[in-house]
Image (cartoon, rainbow, N blue to C red; front, side, top):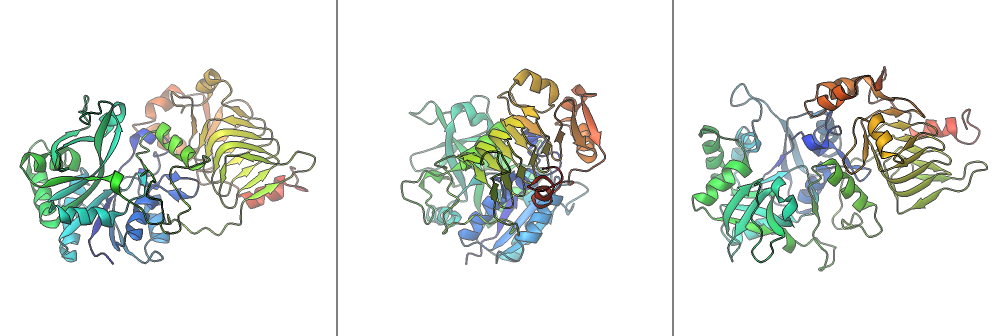
Length: 466
């Protein structure tokens, strides 16, 4: 068992994922039908042999804390402690990633370990962290940064790194407008994954330094990493491409997704349900753990005189029912119901979603507990959809906030609590203001939904609304 303490930075809002993050932190956003984003980093550490984990939370942390305390704190066999912002250093919350660690340095003093791992909690990937720590010790680094190549067109969203022939970092640009490409490969850049292993003493010194300097951002990427590079410290890049996962073939391509925007989040979920997913969730040697839900298996029903269910390149989670419907290239979350003659294509439907009879949907991202009513149509007329739905990406993905009801015709219906959150969230308030008068507000809250079992009794063979 590895005794190195781990700090997971899980307090971020994930503004570019609004409205999915209006009511939850980004690490708490559902992924692949049955997981949460944070499950991936926690599973990586558990599978790598680490057992002392601190999860630093702040923004909209309730659902995240509930998920961690119910499913990770004891059953996983690790010591996991949720550490919300406590104003330990003054009358302020966490002011940045480095400040979050600074305010919890007392936890590291208790561990008495030579190294500390500081990882983000909001990416999708598999990672043998022990291999990175071995490399960190082999090169005698003060700081080791996990790196990954991305297209130069996307690199401005990350910290861009330059290295020498020995993988020592000689330059660090935090989210530059004009990122420096990899030498000899002008279309690619080497970027920081936001995952660090520090010598404990170096981390303590740098956290003390960053909160005392003027014009600080309290940030690892903007402040601490460049400072260590500029001061001549031993800062090395760990090539994520060399990381190998137990149980996967040597030629397997390492998988890492930032999922920082609606489009990237949608695409990453679609990766999972594809014929040959790049991320293997079937590796018994490297399980991705999550909540243990006591739902029955997914069910496919031949409803009355309707044809059989048709399911193509689709992933369907536990407790869901597909009744004489057509699903093509869909990821359907747990405890959902798709009714007779409904057609869903290229869509991501999270848990508790209801798709009514004869409804037709294409490129829809429905948050939990949404209901698309009988004969409703989404995705066939982009211009009409832009007039009807407040949240739609440039690429044409319609995003339904949690608990939304889409009637056959007319304005959509938002739950009262989601409407209030969306109106007041700085990320979504302008969109909501522009749509004033074009949606209705329900008395129900975003947690209201009828699970697939009662829906089947109501709508299935012999039900009153069959």
